[in-house]
Length: 184
Image 1 (tube, one colour):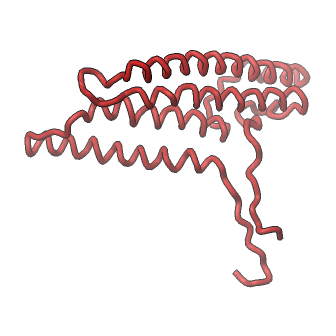
Image 2 (image 1 turned 60 degrees about the vertical axis):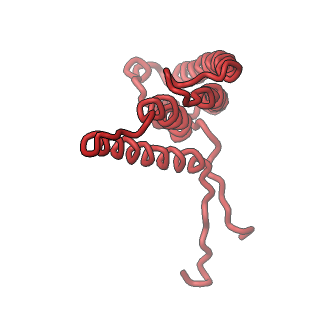
Image 3 (image 1 turned 180 degrees about the vertical axis):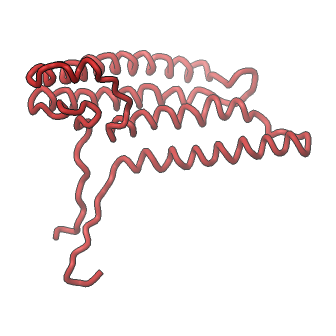
């Protein structure tokens, strides 16, 4: 680019979630593939592959994926009845729905925190192995706490500004992408 045309970089906070999820997914694929190949051809499977996948890889991918999907507005929406509502009603239905889901998410976060703390106290392990399984339990309150904030924000914006009324899947559930241009 020429010096006269300023380049503009955009800080995308969702990448702090998406990049680790992609990395964990690839590591999981390599781990499972290595286990299958070693089991089939050397009769020496990798120890605890099932437990690592079940208690570590999948919770990371699922819970961080929930947060990223909600941030991007990419959850599945079944809005057959919603599309039939008058526009003035859609605003309130969408806002109240988001706020109800936020309250439910707070409940899941609270229950998840209690379970995570209990798992920590008893040093929960994965099945009959000695592999620690308690750390991923803390992803539940983290994910649902984040979702409750996102849903509250989306609900308040829908009620106040009517955002997302035309397409609930595109409701603004997070701050807009931040611009980083070095003060230009």
